[in-house]
Image (cartoon, rainbow, N blue to C red):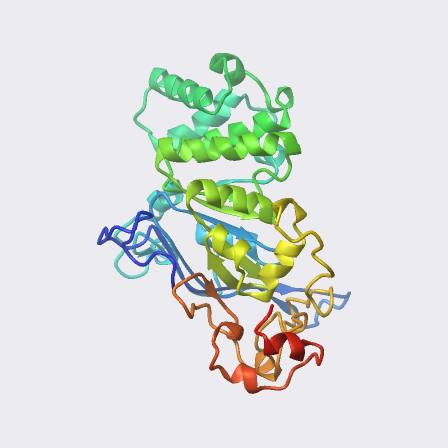
Length: 377
């Protein structure tokens, strides 16, 4: 894979250490009951299936995809909030669930792992206790991180971080209740609570989607500024490719494209937006006019059909083949690996290999033959 290898920092230097966070062949499946019969066998939702990903120190990865693509489930599994069905999640080489369950040799306690992996929720309203002041909510979190800090030190630490996130005068904001804050201010409090834990990684789950458009850029800029202050890594979850591009470009990070539980493309924003290798990435690009691409008329959506398959019964082979205008019979039978043919971004698509059996297989859509002859997407 072309993303940063084990022990490699963002500037490409070899640290000799394991990745901060490593997901290996990770799958998360849920049982889902339908109908009124309590004795009927539940359906199995394949929310995430066989995903591998590495996140390094002060790294930024943005997961993007349609609703139901599995990006939030993957994010929660990555920080230990969702137990995987199979595969591994390792924090600095320590399997998170081995640490939690006390299996084998545990070198990093689960308590320390939980402190180091934090989350900023999409809905700050539900994440804050309405009966607690901002100070009490933050003090509770800070006590978990540093039990030995006295009350004066705790108060000063809270005031300092509130000021860093732009909530000033800090003593005034610390005394407020959630109903006395705007939506943007509540989200800053949630961010403050996460940062008070001095985390190594923060999962930002649609952290700006509930904000007014005018506030989203400010919030994203703030999060990126604080990344430099706290030396933290970010795993962002977004349904908006434009937001993903903004975050990843400014953080020198990567965008991971999720489709129906699979990670189908991973690369820099320049790679994915200027030269997408997976047909689904091109669909996302087509659906995001704010990217200001050179094409004046993007034409019709680059899909054969609009409907997304059900995660309880995903298609065989490449899961995008039911919508892909360039799918062949091979795509219905074989699952493509996330890899690169030219040391650029990784993509789970056979089209990037000129000598693959894909090119000799029958087309599912006859209209694709002319474009395929010219290797067009």
